[in-house]
Length: 255
Image 1 (cartoon, rainbow, N blue to C red):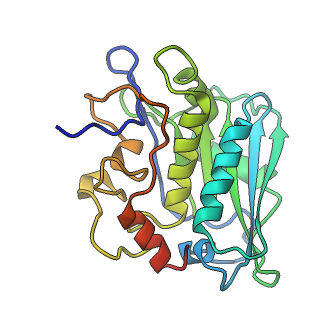
Image 2 (image 1 turned 45 degrees about the vertical axis):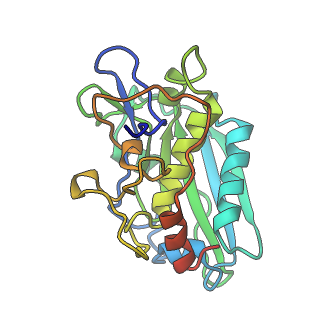
C-alpha cells in the first residue's frame, strides 16, 4: 500500500488541516495598472527579469527565517530571473479579526501592498500575507492553511500553522510553513494545469482540482483537502515537486 502524502496532521477526531487554492483571478490591487500576469511571466525572463515578493505579516506571526530561505531557494531553482529574486518582509498591526474572509484578505492587500508589476522596468512582484487568525470558510471541521487567490496574491494562516506544528508528534514550524508557501506558489506558477500546460497529463481527478496525481508530489491534492484517513507528518521532510510538475514548469519558460 502506498504511503499517504506526509504533509498532513490529524489531532483528535474530525480535526483536519488543509490548504486551499483559489484561482478567481481578481484585478491586481492597483486597478490603474491593468497588467495581466500569467505563470510564464514568473517562470521566464522574457517579460520580467526580476521578482520582488512582499511578505507582509501581522506582528508576532511572521514566518521563520528558515521558511523564507527555503522559499527563496525554491523560487531561484525554478524561475529565470537574471536580475534576481528579493523577498521583502514587513510587519503590520493586527486587523483584529477573529477569522478572515477572502474579502477581508483582499482589503488588507489593498491597504498594505506597496509593490506592483512594472512591465517597463521588467519588474514582477508577488504578495504574501501571514495572518493571525483562521480562515472563515472552513469546511466541516477542517482548517485552511493557505490560499492562492489571484495571479500574484497568496495568504498563509500562520496562527493555524502554529497550532498544528512545533509540538510533540507534530512537524516543525518551518516544515509546515515551507510546505504550504511552496504549494501555494506552485499554483501561482500555473501548476497543475492552472495556467501552465501539462507536458503529459498528470492532473488528478476533477474532484481534486488543479493538483498532481502523484501522492508524493508537493502539488498532490491532499495539500488542499484531505480525506478522513490521513497520517501524521513524519520524517520532517518537505515534499518536492515530481518530475511531471518540473517538466511542466520548464516547458513554460522555467528552469
